[in-house]
Length: 251
Image 1 (spheres, rainbow, N blue to C red):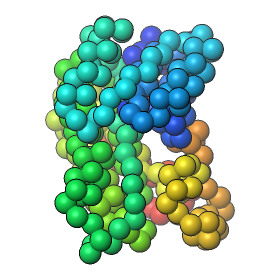
Image 2 (cartoon, helix red, strand yellow):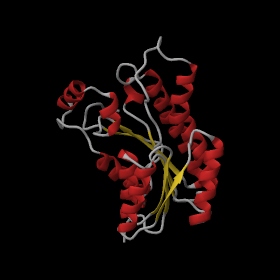
Image 3 (cartoon, helix red, strand yellow):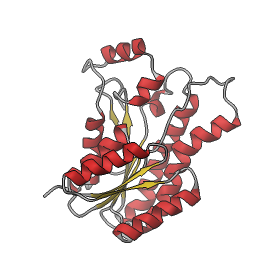
């Protein structure tokens, strides 16, 4: 029996990289998993098939979680498949999209970054919180960038993740009396497509070399921490933004 046996979990942006690793890990611990995706349909199907091959239940649901109508569609599919009780919500959907300095970005880019990273976290939480009861857990994926401002050209990304971190603390206070715990992770340099796309190789090597553990983290290590926070083993952990960066930066 896994630590999450019989639980219902939703992972936004669950089709690749950290989201995929989280979806698979939660399933290995016994949860039934809703893998939300928007662009990565093939990745979502691969993730669901891997979960099903292990004997667990999962579905893939396409929804742009920066749009309220799509969030409503996601809820409809979740309730239709697994009923009206949710135990675990992982707000993982997000992105940098491009590195732009203050003079480079416009209102359209501002809205894109803030909506995908922060608006999605707010309104997905708002939508599914009524289906969550005592013992449920919300886990938001923030970033080390929320603490240190991020790398060059990531002002909006780091600010949006800072908003996620603050929202996490506020919701921990608001939802704690209902028995719902809310925490966030702040990953540092994790070896994913995110950094393949937006971080130069020499920068990655320099950051990894400057980390006490002398390496990048893995998506699986992030997923392990998510599964722990979702379980009863973490029943008194609430309102935390937990660093997972190999010791590169401290709270």
